Length: 209
Picture 1: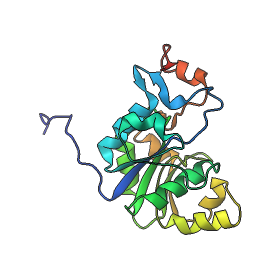
Picture 2: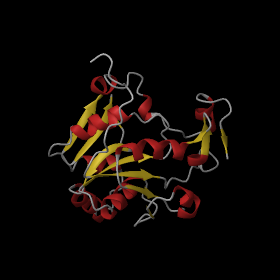
Picture 3: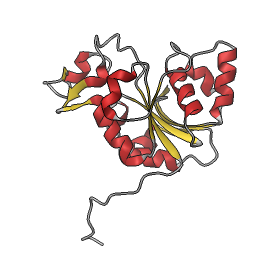
């Protein structure tokens, strides 16, 4: 067993669409952070590479599809614009044909394939699988099923757009910090870019292309 190759290619996960949310306005960054470069690669390209190794098909939710045409991915604009993360999750779930989608933000350069696979394995009969670090939830690194649409539509009817209120209405499997650190000890999976200073910590040459 010791001489087995370590770079074995594992098959994609079936029945789940990979959904990448690129609808943010990047107001704190000052430009479209999806195209910021770290270690020679755009953030969006790094995210697509990992997600494509795990899920087929992929879907990009963006309100500026022309900027991402080079990725040659299926794209959809928010059904209801201006609602933030819950709007992107709603659009993704309404659009995908699979019963579940794994949703990530476009600015997470350290996605961990092993952690993503582990989270999918926890799905069972839950409506969602969501990481939880202390009291902080990570809604844009989570699996959601179409069963969530009932709660999302109810939230919209009540004009409740805070995603934490929506979580109170679904049956979620929370993946707590100890479990997460067992796979990703530094929790780098949840690092996301909000300001140019965030990029400098990763790559002193970080820039917008």
